[in-house]
Length: 411
Image (cartoon, rainbow, N blue to C red):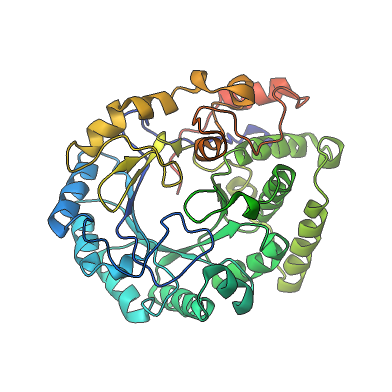
């Protein structure tokens, strides 16, 4: 218990995120052979002729390298990056100039052992694959193409055989909410490095009616906290999960039952029981105490994170379609550091509503992308957070946690 009470829970990059991002994501193409319900990129079968050329992409990589050390993580995403003929060349070049490289391919016939081998030989350190249902029928219905589940399964087997680190992404929607424990079972069997739950933002093909409710999101975050005891787990566009981690960790340190302090949607009980069944059936043991009860890396749209479109437009996030410039016209370094949009997003004193009043604003900040999607204002309060500021009874303990932040980079 003493170890937990002294563990610093909050992770931030070791450097000033006003100067450089922790992560840069490049939308290599919007070409993809899937037709996913939620697709941010509204992917099409063919490559965009106006996308960055190979030479322009090299220039982008040099701009990222110019941020200095430690280098930002650079992620090739899409669409499907395998639809770019120069992918392997660019991955190799990025690796040669010192960028940590990851790739996020789609579950299509292009996801082969040979292509994954070429990625690893080019210098990619990790890949991320998407699983949105525990069965082929459920996953393929979400992805819009029969066979996607099997192609993805073959991909994760090949990646594991090659020694490529694999992250599994799952977009949480009304279509798979009740399937999450079974998806966890698959993730655990895969031997994934991390399970990342994407909390849907209604942009691109994503629709508001496909989202679960704010109360259900809160329940899923508590489920994710439980899952984190068995595997590295994190949210995307669910920034208030960091609040949940701090609250639950404090209650555990005090030996207090969480039920006394949270009234959760009934779906939490369903998810918790499902998780327990998976854990018991697989004989899983909790991870070491020092590896859990820590918040995910604190980055947010435009605040440690930046997205570059296939045409070079720069956005705070792929889910926040407000353009701050173009890398064909101005360096990504200058845009990230100086663009008024980015500087505004990094100023939490300008956040409105409950986010502006919340004691967790410095480690959460809410989803700026969802705020914009739902209200048209990226500074508005997180519309899917149910927390009322300062309502958690252990404010002194929260203040202590916030005052002793853990300034170490995420592994």
